[in-house]
Image (tube, rainbow, N blue to C red):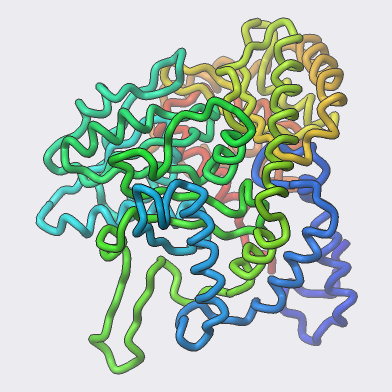
Amino acid sequence: MIDEERAGALPAEGVPAERVLEEVRGLRALDRPTHGGRLFAYVYDPGVAGLDELAHAAYAASAHVNGLDPTAFPSLLAMENALVGAAARLLGGGPGTSAPDVVGSVTGGGTESLILAVKAARDARPELAEPRLVVPVSGHAAFAKAAHYLRVALDPVPVDPVTLRPTAADVAAAIRPETVLVVCSAPSYAHGVVDPVAEIAAVAAAAGVRCHVDACFGGWALPWLRRLGAPVPPFDFAVDGVTSISVDLHKYAYAPKGVSVLLHREPALRAPQYFAYADWPGYTMINSVIASTRSGGPIAAAYATLRHLGEDGYLRLAALTREAVAGLADAVRRVDGLRLMAEPESTVVCFTGTDPGLDLFVLVDELTARGWHTQPQLSYADLPASVHLTVTAAVAPRVAEFGPALADAVAAARAAGPVQLPPELLALAGSLTPEALTPDLIAGLAAGLGIGGGPGPLPDRMAAVNTLLNAAPIRLRERLLVEFVALLQRPTW
C-alpha cells in the first residue's frame, strides 16, 4: 500500500517513479472494479481488447495540449470539430437533414454541457430579471445545479408514477413568460425511459421557448439501438422544436472521462454560450465552454476511440448491450418480490420491491458482497426506492451469473430482514430541519452509521445509511449528504 515515509503527497525528497506507481496501484485496489461487467454505475466498459491501450496512448500524446487557444493547437481544434460532426450526424443533424447548420462544443462532461445549455438560453433573454427553467422531476440533477449556479428559477414538472414520464400538458402548464428553456430526457437516468420529446418540443416551440434534449446518457446508444430495430421514439434534431442536445462520449461512445458534446440546431443559438473578455491588460479571453485551460488528452482519447470502433463496432456493442439488458430484466422477473419499474427501452434495468420483508437497501449490500455493484435510488414523492443498473456491452458475458446471484442475494436479504434503526433516530430524521443540525449531532449520526471513523472511510454495508436518508425529507436528505461527504473529504497531513 502506501509507504508511511511518504509524508502525504509532497515528501521532503522525491520518490522513485516505480514506487509512486506502486502506491497508486495500492490506492486503486480500494476502488470498485471499472472493468469486467459487474459495476452497474459510474463507468462504461465495452469489453473491447486493446481499446484502453489505444485511448491511453492518444490521451498521453495530447495531455499537455491546452484547449484554451485553438489557434495555437490546431490538432485539438480539428479533433473537436470531428467529434462534434460525428455527434451531430448521429443525432439527426448536418448536411441533407432538417438541421443542416448544427454546431457544437466539446465539454468536460454532461453536467458542463447542461449548465452551458441553460446559460445559452438564459443569456439569449437578457431582458428577463428572473429567467425560469422547466424540468421534469426525472430530469438530471445537473439542471438543478445549473439553476443554482446561474440564478435561474427551477420549475419542476411531475412524472406519472406508472409511465415515469411527464406529460406535454403538464410541461405546457409550467411554461411562463419568463421561461427560457424547457428540458426533456432521452432517456431519464433513473429509470431509462424516453420522455415524449416530440410533444414537449412542440409545446415549447408554440410558446417560443428553447427545448433541450438531455441525451447525455442515451445519445450514443439510442441511435444504434434504433438501427438494430428497437422502437426508439423520435428524440433528436429530426424533431421540430428541439434546439439543443447533449451527449456524453464517455458513456456509450466508451471514451475515457471526461468528454461530452453540446449541440445547437444553428449558430445563433450557440452564440450566448461563449464568454469573451478584453477589459484587462492580459490576453483577450474567449471561451466556448466553462473551463479555460483544458487538457487535450480526453478529446484525443475520444477521437481515437470513435475512429477505432467505427459504426460497425458501435452497432456490435449496442447489440451486446441490448442482449444484456434483456437477460438482466428476465433475471429480475424471475424473482418473487421484485418488479421492474419500467420495461427496458434503452440501456437501463431498474427494479423495486413488492415484498415488505425484502429491504432493497439490504439487497444492494448483499449483491455487493457477491461482487455485483448496483446503485440504490431513494424514494421520491410517489416513486418507491429502487435499484438502478446501467448496462454496458461488458455485462453481456456475465448475465448468466447475475440471475443466480440475484436470487441468492434476495434470499439472504429476506433472512437478514429490513434494517431496524432506533425509533428515536427515525423520528429525529422525520422531524429535523436542516437548520437544526449541529456539528455534534452530525458527528453523532455519522459515528452511529460508521462514517468518518475507523481505518476505512465508509462502512462495508450502506443499508443503514440509505435507510436513514430515505426516511429524511428532501432538504434534510441533502444536508445530511453534504455533511457526511464533508466528513470524508479531509486533508491528509
